[in-house]
Length: 133
Image 1 (spheres, rainbow, N blue to C red):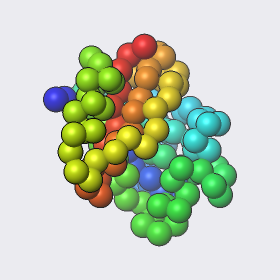
Image 2 (cartoon, helix red, strand yellow):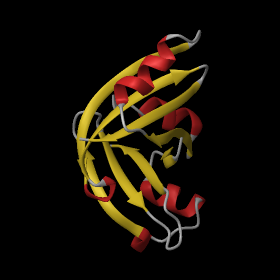
Image 3 (tube, helix red, strand yellow):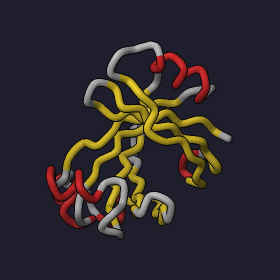
Image 4 (tube, one colour):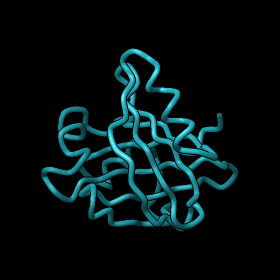
């Protein structure tokens, strides 16, 4: 399985950029995720194929607002590329302590356009699977 991206949550963009020693000019795309209540900032460093996703809540009830308030700027999830969300998520159903949190679609140009995603809780860790739609 190939790592697609790492998701880092924070209460403020500048705090996250400073923690990672990145400039705002490193952001290649910004997506307002109305469904989740977050702004997603995508960064690809010059020689890397993986992407850093900064997840910043814009609503107090967003999917990461409590996590960011509690943990500050911290690793939130690891994203993996998958040819099939169904096959990837079905494997987790057989494992104790693993369950599907949410599936949805979103348009992210740097991910290749429209993608399907699934978030899995796996024994205290969050995994996101990405499938191009």
